[in-house]
Image (cartoon, rainbow, N blue to C red; front, side, top):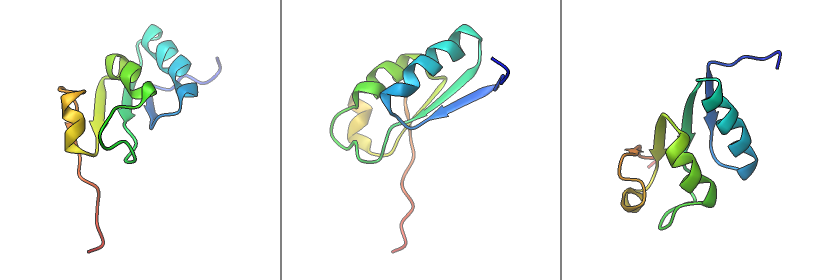
Length: 79
C-alpha cells in the first residue's frame, strides 16, 4: 500500500484483474491493451477488463464486434 499509482496499464494476464479492481476502488485510471495475438475473439481477461478500463485498446478490427467502444490502434510495420 506504499505505492499509489495514478494510472494502471495492462496488456492482459488474468493476474492483473485484482489490481484493476483495486484501482477502481481507489478511483485510479485504467488503460487496457488487448494483446495483438487476439485476432478473432476476445481474451477472457479482456472480457472483464472492458468494463473496468477507462480506455480500452485493440489492435485488430474484428474485435470491434466484441468491444464496440474500444479504440483501434494499428500495429507498426517495418515494411
